[in-house]
Length: 133
Image (cartoon, rainbow, N blue to C red; front, side):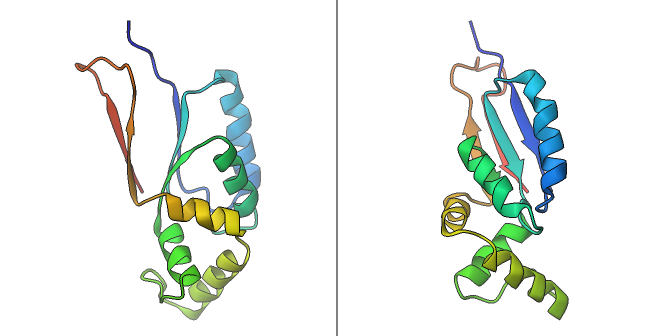
């Protein structure tokens, strides 16, 4: 018998911790879930570090959105691809300065796309989920 998977899929959190916490509280009614998938743009606001710490604890899969791609480029000493104004670059510098080494390492370990295999799923059904921001 195959397993019915229950996955939480989120996107565009942008460092909004109160909204993230509200979603997580709502998801508690479905606990335990089999996985947490985030389709990019976790960073970009004052709650980004707390959100990333929680996602790491949940072993979430996070596909890089423009925010993560740009933040990692700046953290690695490169010019970002997705910044167009001085204000955007200023925000991006703030984002990078407020990420812990652990969070940066976690983001480096993720990618722009991830294939999540669902062990035990029947071949006639979806056995993979492709996550991209």
